[in-house]
Image 1 (cartoon, rainbow, N blue to C red):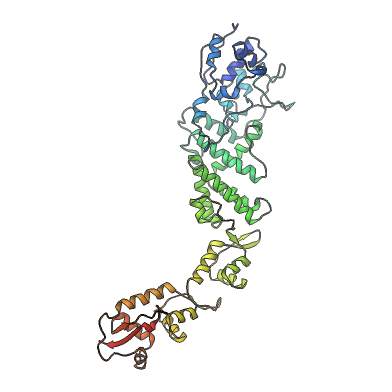
Image 2 (image 1 turned 180 degrees about the vertical axis):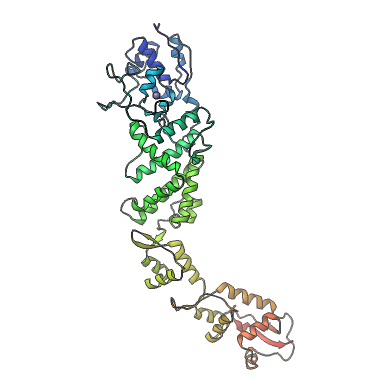
Length: 485
Ligand SMILES: [Zn+2]
């Protein structure tokens, strides 16, 4: 049995406790201690990660050593993490410690085994996980709690930790204690640890990608990790402005050399990640601002159908060049510039070149093709060009576009014409015409221009009949047998 049986301290890390027991009883490291207690793992290895998460039941072995049982504090936290929508990174791979705390209190706190806990809030310094001289990582199998190996004592840093690192650690600590009186950026308020850590890691990940690297928190040294978290914390303190600035950086770093295409890929990628994890309240908060940003600053990046449904059904880019826009509109590229002057198209400058929203261009093309030119309107309504022009000038028929200094073409509102004809059909008399009716030509001879005639028909000043014209259902010629009331 053991010579010394220290008891576990409140807030002590279970592995720290094992190291202390092992150290006080002269074992080489915790592997030897647990072998002594009956754990038969190969090469005296110990399931450190599972001990930290509480998945591994240490109590059996503590009882074997004649010690009181205890449970991991991290277990309930780690169990609250949901695999798919939360960050997978919570617990450190290598230990990190505050040497000053070890000296003062004689044990390691369990918060230190959480990745985002960067600095000791009591001593204001970054935690140590690496030997400053040799670069060697501190490990769980050390003989002494306060030494790297048999001789090298873990020294604390001389510098004070960056304020963001301290604030983040304070935030984590208060969160673990139930979150009362927590002071944190507004965006984090009311979030659980799993949610805020997911949010933080999400941003850290995309920031690393933007810089061409990757965010691998488990293998990073604490000081390196601190730089990433520091950046994110500063962003959260200036939310959402700093986040918008961050998203703006994509404009200067489009994915690969694909230019606009790469930019779209970036945003789509971001969007899809946000969408997949949107059940996580932290991620949902990023998504809210992301959607806001896209809507306001770069609206054509995401197809509207993609917002509700993620599917790679189309490989088409959402932003098109001037030439492509002209092709879609079936016009000369100069016409595209004129549409911009008419404020019918909004160009977006990217890498010094103007681009156009495919949605907007196609919308215009649809508007043109689903309405009438003058000739089409004349044919459908069976009017002369002169008559049509009179009706348009009188405002009886509507236009979507009139010729001006930017264009020569009329676009006649087809739907409105259809509605007008339909309403005249309804006004037509239903019974057999009385005697003395006049044809349209006769009416015109009596001074009824097409405009005057249609107005009289609309107001009921004259009666008229209707004869359906099969080839031209919208023809004005279907109205006959005019009679004065
Ligand atoms: Zn400390």
